[in-house]
Image (cartoon, rainbow, N blue to C red; front, side, top):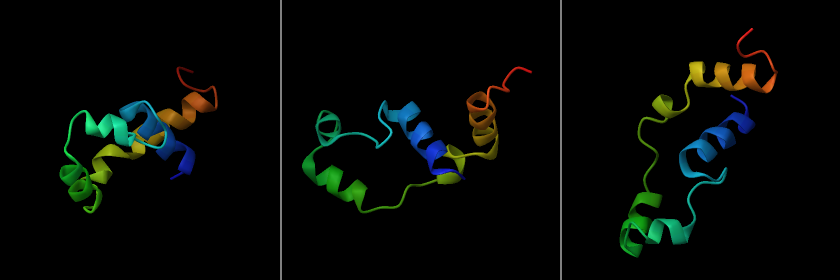
Length: 67
């Protein structure tokens, strides 16, 4: 999958293509929780980055969505 799609999916989830900032995370988690979650792989990444999601993103980007 295109890195651009991954950035778009991340921006859709967090409002930023690079993901949540430390300040954003600190509003919800302790420093220990942030460190612990950063040390684990993302669970169910396949559910977040799907072929259908990629297809819709690609078609929209190519101006073909809805045709």
